Amino acid sequence: MPSVPPAPIPTHTVVAARAQGERLSAQRFHLVLLDTERAGTVYPLATEDLRVGKSTDNDVVIDHPTVSRNHLVVRRQGDRFLVQDLGSTNGTFLDGAQVREAYLRPGALLEVGDVRLRFSPQMAPVQVEPTVEDRLGDLVGRSVPMRQIFALLQRIAPTDSTVLLVGETGSGKGAGAKAIHKLSPRAAGPLVVFDCASVSDSLIESELFGHEKGAFTGAVGQRIGCLERAHGGTLFLDEIDDLALDLQPKLLRAIEDREFRRLGSSTPISFDARIVVASKKDLWAETQAGRFREDLYFRLSVFTVSLPPLRDRKEDIPLLVEAFAGEGLWPRLPEKIQEQFLGHTWPGNVRELRNALERARHMVDIPGLAGDNLLREFTRDVPTPAGDFLPVEFTGPFKVCKDELVRAFEREYLTRLLGRARGNIARAAREAELDRKHLYSLLHKYGLVQSEPD
Image (tube, rainbow, N blue to C red):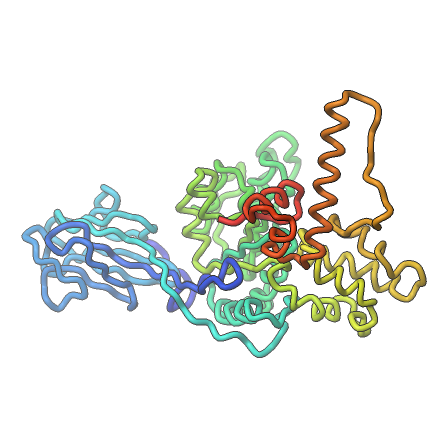
């Protein structure tokens, strides 16, 4: 019999805005009737139990000769849904296999006699009131999107559900994971961090699940994996989009069953850990492209929070400067430097800002350094002085030298253009007399923005 997850029952899954101005949404699961004259009817799974059968006292009444009076029940257990057959005459089938009880996966097909139901997630708008506070753990921001995220994390943290954090590199996903852990009932337990992109594919399985001595060449001793070390706490899997496809079903099985086996061992090991994952890519788009398993995506995205890039919340920059550098640094920065901070597109996001501040705090009072050169060590798009020349190479094939010069010109033009427009793409496109989409394409080509518009 499937074990009951210890997680409290969440009311719904909250998904934060992916971009500034985009609505907040909630993911709710439904049963969709596929047959009979009422095909297309949607039945929300809004309560702990949803009963299906021919009798009129059921939540889902299906008047069909092959359906029993009380056919089945769908029970919500934490962030999973368990279907149980109630001794029906013709049985309950899940994706073609008869079951007495089983957990549903998104998209699963239920056959109730000869009538089919689809277990499906749907998105609905939800209003999230921003917090008054401008900080949550190491996350800092007074912009509305960030304060909405603070409210989301405060709501999510007390549950034991899996969380997916989505955002560009350096946008604060690690800080978000720490905040979730510290605000959760597991705060006294370990926070184990594993970066899926930092370990070769051949070693990731050992890092996650551990191994026994002699399990493979080079396994000279027993190794305890991340899942085991995270017992009683939180496991943060960063860059989950880099996890190899062949390992994804193994991770899914471990999360579903709450047990795993070390490499070289047949003994199952139970673990009790909250799972938080992070991705720099849109995982749903990755599933559609065949690069990420859809079943693992749905299991990881019980809660999804998208962190905005710094260029979309530049009103937070003065507050971030004070939070990272302190000592009233922002007011002491020359106006020209403040303009550079506010005009920069920050492709490295908050991490890039922190690095720039580390140098700025030591240079701001040194004559001759608090000028155009202050940020050049940390940014790729700070304009060079007007008197500087583009690098020109006069040796080598003509076409190669010419192409390099053209690329250098385009990049310099675009960085200065973006600086004058303070990161406003529409304004930059008007000044350059370029189509906005074409400008986005050029900016993306030189790494001055992270993505192109739809």
